[in-house]
Length: 497
Image: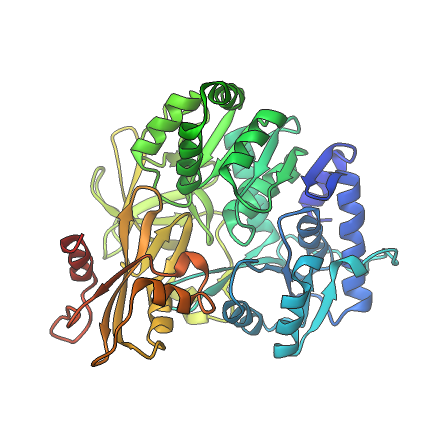
């Protein structure tokens, strides 16, 4: 049996999940996930090793689908519930899946997608009271999870991790952040990214802790849940902390006292997925007495660096290598740089992903003598703490905890009838980390406003990929080879503030 399921059996009577529909124990979680696994094996168009895509809101249902697909020997492919149809269809087609499972809320949307790509659709509520015998037990080396992440080549790539990779990622964080069955956490993160799936949900399940799901982030609701339920942990992206600070500042003195008391009682609060502005860290510390624990990771590697649970946390730094993770900084030739010098982060360990789905060349190019090349530039201080300096590629934008491809957005924008050429860059922003910004060259006599562009893009791009800044230019800056010079594009935005 998969290790995370064995861990769950040890805590069968503990409360595992609280969502909008109720409270569920680990035993209920195991029973339902076994039903899903059996259904896939006996009543679905499914074979061992198949990709199973699913579309479900953060919930007990989502969790049982993840575990059920693993028990059946499938590769779980969680899909983003807020993505437009075009992006969901791309993921379905790229995975080559035969089955799409959906909860009641997204059934109509999922059914249209399934018909378009000609695959079987299963409604979650139909999976009940069936034979729960299993003919297969997955191995630790079997493929387990495929998360889509944007790369520099434009279209998202499927990052494939094995059960062994996931177990390594979980064990690393459980040890480093002292998870236990006494813990409880409020889950407010997307469940198609490693941050929400591994750092929060999987670590909670492994530890026998309680995970409460909030289907939609609202700062006021989060604060009230902090006050009412006495959580021990919280993990979020900098944008969420900024919004919680804004809500705190708008509250009256009595409510602020309750807010401070609730957060001060927690044992750990973590920030990740984007650079944490020092001003946000300082404001949060003033409110809660917590120095947010910053860490560093990515879909391909899980978490690699973390400030210590006990010990000094350095503002602006993402900490030290986590247990079982080897890290080096190298120059463009692959040679290790001297202490204090900037270099690209390369990583090795059991947590590193297996491959990019059906992209052999991209997988090979991502490694150097067994080390994964992250594309992130960092430097190390005299105490061994790492500071992220930025992306090696200017075509990756980190916004609100998401990492998006500028090239993918440009490809979509170029289909607009008014746009002749465009360049998408990330412009630094305290709340979002970076905001997606588009410099556009229009066709003769064409016109386009930011609101018009955003309205048009809503059906083609996820909300966080839609440009928030627009600059109309006569010509885009190019080098002698005719390639657009992205640093010069960023400078244009700074000039036109």
